[in-house]
Length: 359
Image (cartoon, rainbow, N blue to C red):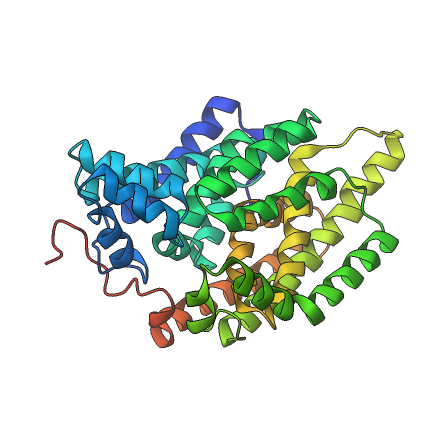
């Protein structure tokens, strides 16, 4: 399964089998992890066993910072007799079903997409921020199709419903519809960067104001989510480099091909991942002053990584392709190893244990 092999040359059945084989190990590592793996896993474990009665659940729904849909899922699972470990397997299944879906539907290089999931530490993120990833997965499975069908009302309603029930930050997915339907040019990129700069200047004040008005999320401020960290800066640098490669692919392959054929129809298999890439970098810029924005950008990460793998697949005939891919892959492996060794507390996935061996 070569990193350079184009998955578009495979028939649908072969691509499904390849995606399943490559994604299965990541699913197993996530589903069967012990409660000590991941910075937030212990918190989710405690929440799962928190409510002994329906009245306690109703009382908690009014005051909890956690969205009601997730609390209700926990309550149902607990009262059906499922252990937290079994519930965790179901959550991992939902998340990786969405990753499998976009791998089959959008990726031109499944092997490299899975390589990116590992080396960018996206798999570690899935082990940590379960609610965000559940929301992302549900939107990928249920809402993205409305972009292709040009049904903005259904797209917006489904995104809002998932946001209110599972994780409010998923509301940023509303940005995807207009960006995915925009034919990118320099003027539009400049306008988007100008809007991002305004959000960069005033985003922190707006965030603190909203926290004060809502009165439920003080812990975000107390935990330093409105401060800039090294991880935010590193993510921005990495994502900006990726976006440069993606934009080059977009202009050299997509725009030229469209202009040559006088096509107005949008290729959503390319445009949806490209739109996610642009949004991620804009959010990362805002995250330089507002760390919580970096947690929001993870909603677009799977399709962003798809766009990177697609860019390399479409640039295969370009001069210097193999050198560029070798450099990028080498830097990603170095990034992965360095963070794993010297900043293991960022994700707390080592030492890794399963719930069979965890005490």
